[in-house]
Image 1: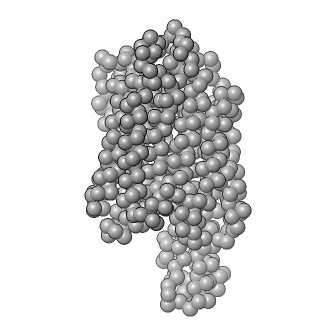
Image 2: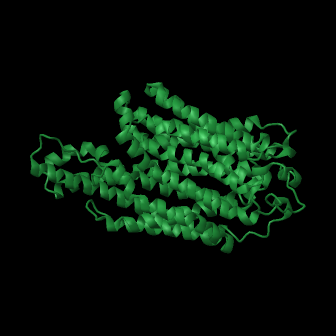
Image 3: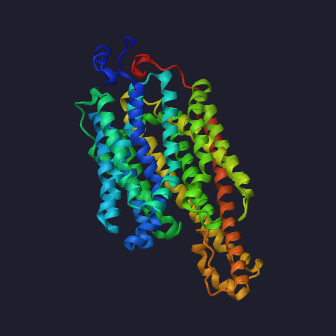
Length: 536
């Protein structure tokens, strides 16, 4: 394999690479990290399908089931940048393999533990090891691909991430329906074993060797973890506590204060956990915001779309998952396309385009009703898939591609943190928006559908169920009344959906404007920031 004379810090010399066989091939590295990425992406979205069955089998309360999701999310968000920093300092290959192994073992433990408390604990363990794995996928790619090929590698990385997330409901539905809920976690065992064996053979070691003698920023680790934990905790509890409650505002406010202290601390230490100088690059900063907004739209929308398809339209989990396939297929096309467009025209073109596609998807959903034909559903799914895929490629290039090679893992952790916080905000905020709108319109929609006013007022207490797409009917109701309650309840739910998609569409338009203003075409990459210094 031909090489140039420049070898960046922390990378093996070309002569060493020639002797390492498969570990000199960046495309084999890409395949290896795709295994781990697929496992984490799939797990993130299949659990929502398994939660009802977990609740029945383990006698779990609604609050318990929330913690099945939240414990994973909190551990993941708190440790992502730490995972990237450890990879940069001590070896990205090492911490990627540790992450895959730990994630696999924790997945099996969740299926075996037999109690809801154990599931919650091992979900947190799973989240921690996911935080070691995820940022080092991008760090490894940043270290082995030259700049002119990095964009395409990120496009494929984004495709794997998007497809695994979108396939979750289908895979989860099949497993829960035909096997059991434990199989949702057991499926990670064969994937993890294959990932470990293959990665051990082909992944090269890379790290920032110049940082070997630096002291580790322990206070930074503590401050960042505490700040992120508080913010994410406030976000995930905002929907149940109320967004203006003292608990929600206190948790988020305390987290923001701690993160400000973290930023001040990072500017004062010689070897920071997250170098604030990275944010001097406008493309990296805007890319971080757009990453969060991208997953705000994606995960928030998928959440209420699955409620709509299953609870309003009556599809099974598998049928609902199949109907979202256009989103997955569109993201498959859009990820490498987005990478190619970013390489050709810069992220300043691709980011706004992706945001506008998502805005178009949201505004098209305003036409949905409780009995819309499928012909009205797949166009916004395609637009969203195209937008998600393009934004994953463009924002990854903007964040990781604009960071120095030595900070590749930290940049990957930064992107993954933005992704998780954006997804948590999307789900929590949009559920809250839908719930609020349902509460204000439910009684009116019920009476309009023919429910007697006194009965409609009594059913107003069921707004939480209606906000999940479930009509508050009982077997004791006469058939005409039951039909009227279903119609009114579903119309109230659709009012909430319309408010949520309108707000999300406006956010996407604002994101497009921010990308146009904040991102400029990157200058030629100097030698010090080049990829591996060799061609592929």
